Length: 133
Image (cartoon, rainbow, N blue to C red):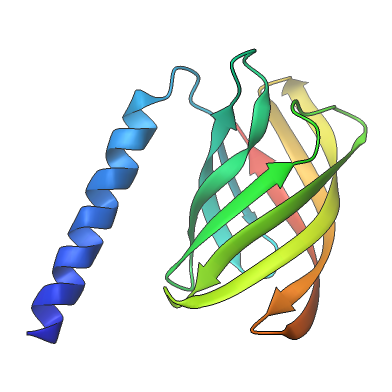
């Protein structure tokens, strides 16, 4: 019975994520390693500026990064906060800053980040690198 519930949960999660990715007008994705590897897609405001990313992480969890100011500023520091889970149920929260380095245009860039946060009230720190396309 538990296996059926787990399979049903992951099928529902996959369908939800697929529908949301297909509904994006401007698909833009991020893949990276911060405290753990993750993959996500961009979230935009009404003006078309990126407000953050949400997605999944390799530790079977949900990850969300939101910028304090909408829009990514290239060759500049972009402060953010993030929330998510590890192992589906263990919550975490972080605050940090990332530096965006353009590759060839505004749609492709690398980010280097530093963050501090809490996982189950245990302090964590991290540095990371991501690629956005």
